[in-house]
Amino acid sequence: MLLSSLGTSVANVALPTLAQAFTASFQEVQWIVLAYLLAITTLIVSVGRLGDLIGRRRLLLAGIFLFTAASVLCGLAPTLRLLIAARAAQGLGAAIMMALTMAFVGETVPQAKTGNAMGLLGTMSAIGTALGPSLGGVLISGSGWPAIFFINVPLGILTLLLAHRFLPAERRGRETDRTGFDHVGTLLLALTLAAYALAMTTGRGSFGLLNLALLVTAAFGVGLFALAESVAAAPLIRLAMFRNPVLSAGFTMSALVTTVVMATLVVGPFYLSGAFALDAASVGFVMSAGPVAAALTGVPAGRMVDRFGAHRMTIAGLIGMAAGASIMTMVPTSFGVPGYIAPLVVITAGYALFQAANNTAVMRNIHPDQRGVISGILNLSRNLGLITGASVMGTVFALGSASADMMAAPPEAVAAGMRTTFAVAAVLIVVALAIAAVGHALSQRAAPLNDGQDDGLD
Image (tube, rainbow, N blue to C red; front, side, top):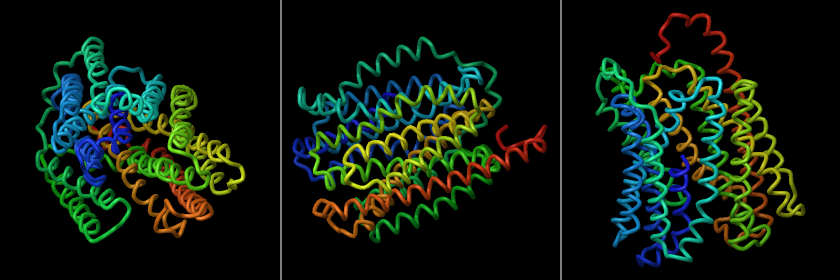
């Protein structure tokens, strides 16, 4: 989990250096980041299902090896196109690592400690996200841009050895459940997700005809995928699982919440530089407060989930996020940088608590042969939220500031855009709270009726 999140964040800081190294435009080098994210987004559900079918341990080991080997290729890439291709391969390895790491929690950790394990995974993800920009900057200044990829090699080898040594061997006797792999559904889902991701990222904030065409394609793809899954003998995703209110609510809330989290990453740099005239180094230092808060909160949050229950802690985390977002809309710029850091810490700490609780609720009490695909869908919902947040919240920020060029906007306009963005964020969290309440009520009502019945997960 640490490696895959580090791979997401470490490359962003290198984009200006890579643009110079390959004599390329920013639009071209941004594909170094997009290729990684697209590979994860389009394939994470499929690799989760594949792990259920062929064995999670062997596929996870293969994913770690692929991530490590692709890191070597990234560092040695002589051209931009080869670097982008190697980053896509690295993203496939990261997708396997993300999906199957979470799936292994249900296989290796007692249910009473599931929350603690999920909190620890959240901490590792936050540490990787926070470490990426600072570590990348140090490596680039000291050894050049290939070092940000070569650093993954010793870490990957160590991870591979540890996983091979300590992860439990595959249990025999599961072959009767391996009814085949849904190739048609896999292809349709990958193309649909790729169309949506490209619609949200192409144009960097400007929404044109190409974005609209990609969105229409994605919507059409969802219909085709649902039709294909309804007639498939061994579907990639059993549509009946969405009748389970815990799962459907968990997936939806994850997407909404990570949309809000992305707002802090999109709006923060513009607000800090525009309203307080901070330089790039100072902006990076202030922005690190969020991931640091999430990292410090992760393990205690997991323990609270085990002690007080996933539903209560889901509500508590969402209330914390709503409070932080609401405070962000009311703090005047006269409070300075501390006035931004305080609600940011509240938002990210609430997110860490929500993530530990929601992941525990979704991954607990599911059929062992569905852990991989459900973990994949949970990670997918998170990635879709991040992608959507980058586009939608960026647009809301621009509209709220009433400025076409954010770099030239006056401080008052930037502050107005920030308040508008977090007002929308607070509304999204309130919607997530309503979904949590309704989902819990439906699950409580359905529990007595589902005894001995198929819930779509078996």
